[in-house]
Image (cartoon, rainbow, N blue to C red; front, side, top):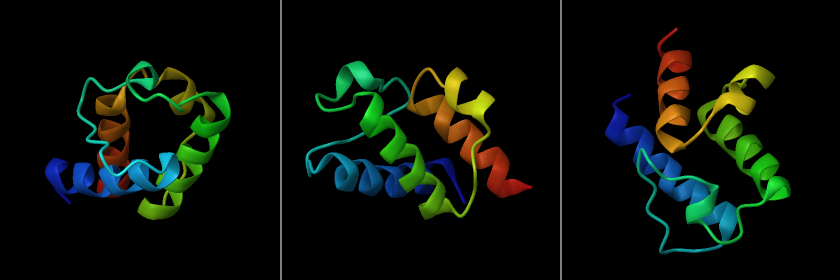
Length: 81
């Protein structure tokens, strides 16, 4: 899976979780950029991403993610294993 394919899938997950068809995530996207992205929605988002990609983030990975780019890096490293 390429980085672009991961972004395509993530855009759909973000749009579904936040119920906003206009969302387009990129490397620098953070919770500050999406209006409803609070701590509860973060949990829902992580669960939805894990389900979509058939993987699990470790707690360490979740707490150190600073932006969507870091999330993509982790997803790519996990699905490449």
